[in-house]
Length: 184
Image (tube, rainbow, N blue to C red; front, side, top):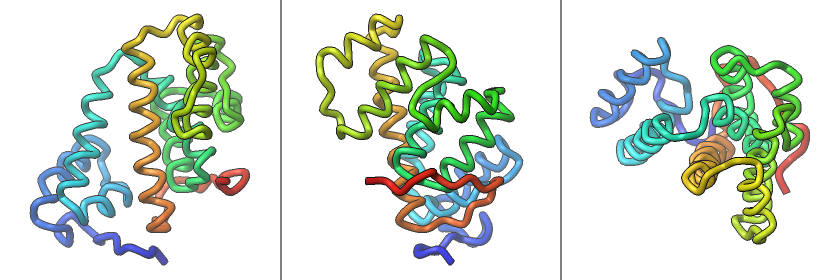
């Protein structure tokens, strides 16, 4: 049972959220519980979708965006987001099971992506207090300043959805994957 109500349908959602939820349905074919939950606040839904849309046009490749989402969900022990992003990572970004497991462990089997995932995980664990060496490591791996800003932005976006789902105890509407341990 969720701790914050999730409207059962688009029609049961606040009127101001309905057009955005209809757009989500058009894009995905369904409206995942997360979007209906956040749609309780039309302003929050607008902000979430705006940031997702903007970052979708960014310089980071889709696979790396998925990797970050999986890694951040694992660190934050968000079972909803871990389930959703593992499913989407496998089926849309075409990540292998080995890659998803590496992401959950805070890395990647891809050398360049490994630096981005390690940076993202450290960002979450230190709440942004990274060293010069941390920033230089991701730059040495080939990430531009713009891409580093996008990594930080993806961490923020995913932390937002992680926190909403953890607080609400959102019902998982993807194949369930549980975080390996609770967040510290």
